[in-house]
Length: 196
Image 1: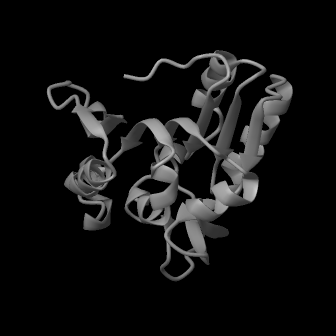
Image 2: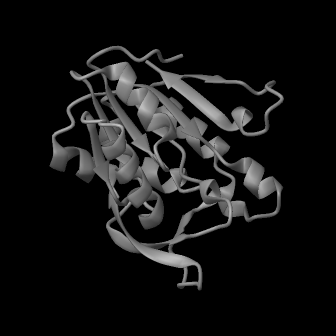
């Protein structure tokens, strides 16, 4: 439901290695800004290199997790990097430490006054990130939040079951929603599109 325009401000929480950042950067042009937030240190290093190599000068990079409180958490490193996730459990042999902040604090610190599009794909942590951004949500025009119930369905843990929470949170914030529940791709069914 969102079509980027020159000059738009996009926030990409869970920017990964830059797949969407590249398209966002080109779409909003030199007058626009893309805020790329990535928690995993290794993915963030690749994201930095990707932006530098492609001269994405309108991208602002933040290496942290968006959560509901300031804390130091762990991010897991999995064989399929797109599945890396943040948790507050004990360290594991495959985890790395990451700083976490409520996005309301991040937005205020960096003076982000409006958000034309919020993209969030953070492997179950959306239930925490959304709690840390009630003021930010008031400034968002369009959003696409990826829920991860399919990971719970695969037996990876009930903490990944976030669809209903995302829907309730966005509706309470005054958004209209579109959900592509009939799409045959399992992950597309979990993308909640919102606009006001």
